[in-house]
Structure formats: C-alpha cells, structure tokens
Image 1: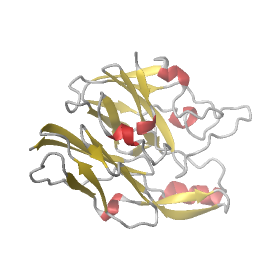
Image 2: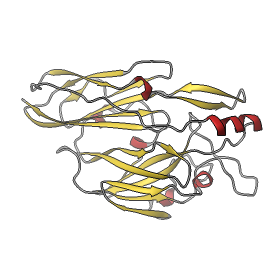
Image 3: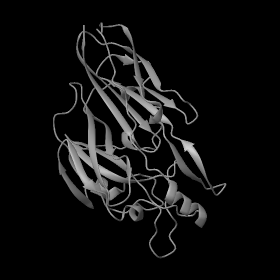
Image 4: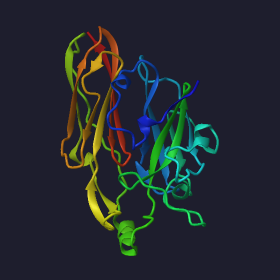
Length: 283
C-alpha cells in the first residue's frame, strides 16, 4: 500500500514534530529539495530527495513528476487529489535527481492568478508564497515537494505591485555547516549541534494585506533531527523571525553498539531546505 507523506515536505506543517517520527524505524522521505528554492514559471529547477530507513538512505531511485491539476481555492490540501491519485502529471523521469521546467501555468493552477469568471485568488502561505507540487514515488512511498514559484501580488495597490516586481528577491536554500562528531559511545547522552551561517535566514519583501504596504521580514528557520536508534531529547527547534541564533542542539541518547545514521534537516519559512546525513559507528 502506498503511503502519502505530505506533512514532512509542506512548508505550512506544524513546527512541533511528533517525537515518534524522529526515530527512523521504517522507510521514510524526509525532504524534497528544490534548486533553486524559488523560481518563476518556465524556469529550470533540479530536485533532490532525502530518504531514510533503519539501514540508512534508500538505494531505490524515485520516479518524479510535476502535478498539473489545478488546486481549487477552497481546498486546504497543498496537493490536489488527482495528483495524489497519479493523474494529471508531467513525467520527470527516474533518478537520484530530477530536472524540469516549471509549468508555465503554475501561478494559475497553484498561485493567485484567476481564470475569467469572478474567481477569488488563492490564499498565499504565511510568507506570501505559492508552490508548485512535485511528486516523488520510491519503494511504495509517495511524497510531495513544494517548489516555490514567484507570482505577482493579486490584490495590492498598483504602486506596491510595481515595487514588489522590481525589488522582490527569490528565496535561496539555506546551508548547513558540516557536523563533526568524535567517538560515539553506546547507551549514553551525546550533544548534537547543527550550525548555519547568519545569511541562511534571509530578509524578504512581504505585502502586509491589512496595512496594504510592503514591509521587510526575516525568515524563520526550523531544524529537525532524525536517528535510526536511541532517542532524541528535542527533535525540532524553531528559530523565530526575530531570533538571530545560528545553532540548534539536541541530546541523543545513543543506541547499542553498531552502525547508526543521523539526519538534520534545516527549513526556512519560504520553503528552502538544507540537509546533512551522518553515518556513525556507535562503540
């Protein structure tokens, strides 16, 4: 049976992860990374999947596709039902990565553009963003990445719209510094720390619909930890917009001696993602 893993790669998911999900006891999709993290329709984007299992990353290559079925403005799901069912797709092939041209009608199918007939624009996410769904299927797992697309402001005054078109800077993926671990003893507490450069949290132009003005905002970040054994004291840390922190830590109570894997996934609030994987021998 196929399992749809939507929440792990949808920008609007709850920041508090279920602790049970942090321990990898079955095959999982942890993230789908788009490069660039945001682009206009018809731009070329490359996608990379981050997978995990009790034995490490999955060896099977995923099958990729763009969703093309329009998402009704009244539908809460980020991915329309036909795409989940395997309908209305643009095939992107099978491989560790996939490269494709963002559909030209992305802002119409998933963004604020509306067809004739008095339809209302779709709601943006909390950062003003819209997303083209990307489908990845691997070893019976069905996962969806959300590729941020740059669209025009739907309801802003003309002057604000012009300034936005001229000044808005598309999102970039954050980066994670390498994680260095020494000898890892079994059945003990080990501090794990993820670090990233200050510029990982970018400042971006945002249209405040209540004040009807453009404002500068700073991205929030979320660092999430995953392990193939043991337990994690904290599995996710949220770095708010006004928090300048560039590190996040957790305590890993290590499993019995043997091979183990760790992953850390860093997400920004505009859909950008970075990930690190560590293969470890617990002694």
